[in-house]
Length: 296
Length: 296
Image (cartoon, rainbow over all chains, first blue to last red; front, side):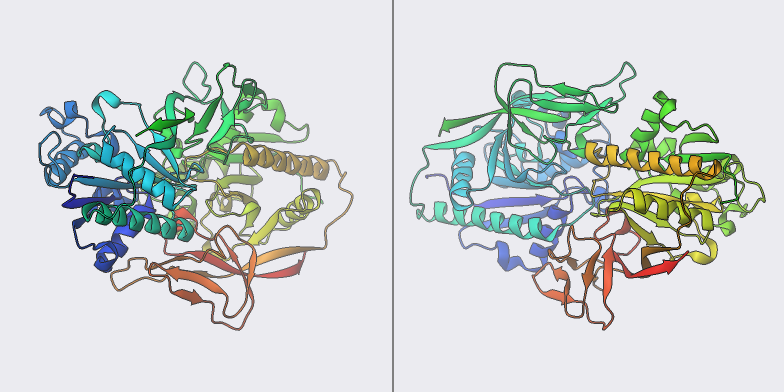
């Protein structure tokens, strides 16, 4: 790998009620040695301090949907997270610059879905995918999800830099810290830092040529009535079973009255982010993805 | 049982992000036959509509701590939930009246703790305890928790009436609806209504003489530093294991750095409401209770 990593950022509390990231940043700030490597610098950041203090996802709008170019360069948006995004963009980016202030952003999230340890990637950058493949080798149980919801103008925190990704861990409720996921996420971060150190020092044993991923197809909303009220719940077969294969006629939802609503397409898919609390207001009950191996 | 039940109330969404109750009330409103019995009337109520709309626990303060007499009769409190509490008190009570508008309140809650199906009782009223004993007979896996945190001036919604209790179901994240707990809670409510129907018609087979309960001892906070920041998490042995017996030297917490903090008292206790999201701000990590059989 030719590209040298000079500085990376670990951001937590982008959503103020996702405590794994909030407390990992606390831990790293108190124990800077844990994120110190010789060949690069690590920046630690609580991305949304006001939301963290209130233990809420956001103050005015979702910070992790506020980094699209059209918003960063729009002078007519004034909500709290719009302004915060512009500030973070200056600190870590700016987005689009040939040389950004940091080279890689690891953004820490948690989810109420049973996503285990997941890496969410929304770019096609080589270094990012090599890092993901390295992680998958070190921690085989992780899953890699390629998000293609807004590829044209990605809006995540880690979209500021060419390289980076989000870590999503779950199931954990909003506003709750779970020890098991806390320590597992910490280990994962340690592996990523090792990857950069090895990459910088030419000590990576190999270049990864392919990787198994879940590739975003589409988002699926809950069944709703004419007034937009949710009329059905995730079916118990699917609840807590993210990354499960769904085939035609498999149950997806069950109405409040007990009627089953099944998947009725021919194509086999996999369900991710099943019953994530924060997505009720966004209007989706799960992501559907296909499983594939892609060339790197 | 001599006392005749004329009217009961089922309240949901007392905490706006506890969706089991919110959606059960929706279901019952759309299918009134489900809660209809011949000998009494059932009132359905979304207790905190503004919080439900925002999918947040409360707007200004916890509604389910707003029904103490000292607050209901205090004309100097003006927060949203203070005013809401006074309104609900007039509709369902008023508290302290010889004849309240409803005779029994069933208040529906959910918790991020793995509390299964739990009944939380904060009064010593005979009818309430007979109802609880009937439920325990019908659904043996439920647990009965006697809350004694504020016995002198109870502040729960169901404190408006002499008789009533809260149902707590979990584990479910805030802002999430789980089908399994939804249907189980619905069945539990149906049993309660059957109890009142049988009681009114003299068809109860027996008077219950004793019941196994978990009796509140005290609340335990997370370890914190001088700035009041949480420094330790629920130990993995205890996470998801509500109603587990804790003995001297059993691990309770693990610090962010991995140091175990154990229970150091002689008395065996049981841990309830372990890692409930809403209690972080109240300053407790769990309730400690003792298990006992009490005479009715």
